[in-house]
Length: 456
Image (cartoon, rainbow, N blue to C red; front, side, top):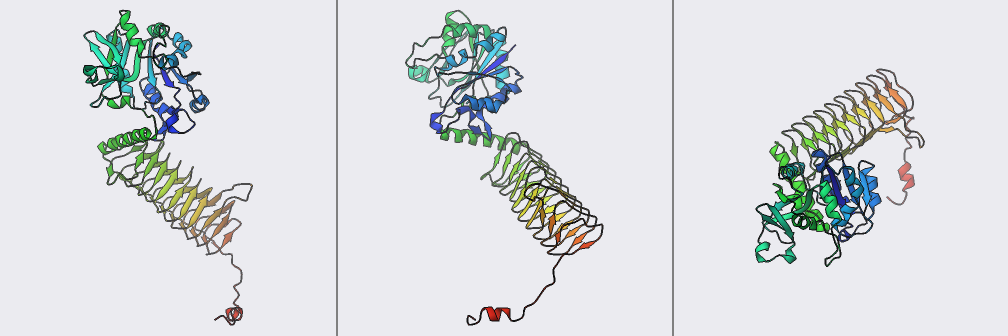
């Protein structure tokens, strides 16, 4: 069976943070997850992650999805693969893909196409490569009529070799049995005193086995990040690649300032994304929507023809034709039904807002089930928490909630209920009733004249 080993033991000291380098995020996902996703997309189920510095962070993140092994000492890429020896022996009759956990732009097509070449040419090792106009700093691929003869690092390359534009990505296909054999023949006879995986190419050739190379059509497969500047570059490239995909699919962007869309987000044709908008997670946006400016939408489903302006929405469903904003917070587990209008300074939490209901401004609705065609006056609050228990409010269809109404949960309003401005509702109200709760207003004439005597 074919399998993959992902090298994820890097510390990333220049990042200046105490997490493994592959756990730094590109578009909201750890670089390691990008590499795992590429493997999964290529059909892998057997993956071993070689961890090192703060390896428990990787274990916690993976949550048992895949096997991990520890590289206690950092003695080179070859040494890292040695730690997976037991894993390799379980599938020694297949092929093994070795990838870098901090090179996030490896893609499934490159992996699959490289394996095809690897098998067709009956290679012992196949190096995944890319062609760069500016190859400085990368190991050059030395091709021959029968494959490749080796990889020459730039510091060791002569002038002719430095002119080669095909470079090593750090990703390889091996016959697993040959890889196990090669690992036992690696030495530390180099300046760094490390075991280099690149030496396996020379070992294969010296033993009369075929070494080949597959040049990816994606030159970004070689890219990684050694510091925060490099990480910013990866994020910028990933961000623009996602935006270009959506442009090709008919999504409108008038300005890209502050726009970030994670690669898992789906957007239908005709939608406009305005500046300052951040779309995350498993968000799905329908057709002909207007999202932005300055929205944050995470793990939400948004129907067609919706409009969000200065909205933060999380783990909720917003149906077709809804208009929300500005300055609105939609908290998790909310459902905003079709045709709803929500205005400025409104917060909705764990609630259902029925069709064509209007919540115009300065209102909090939490843990509530609201019917259709209701109207909420300014300053309404569902008082859902008594300090110990959170309770729900139920509001029927066609209710009119007057300004500054407090609904003390649990309470139910029937159909067509009106509440007078300033009312506090403490018990259920039947259908088509008016609820009014006001004390007797008193007027104390001349009060301010007495209070401010000598100051007016």
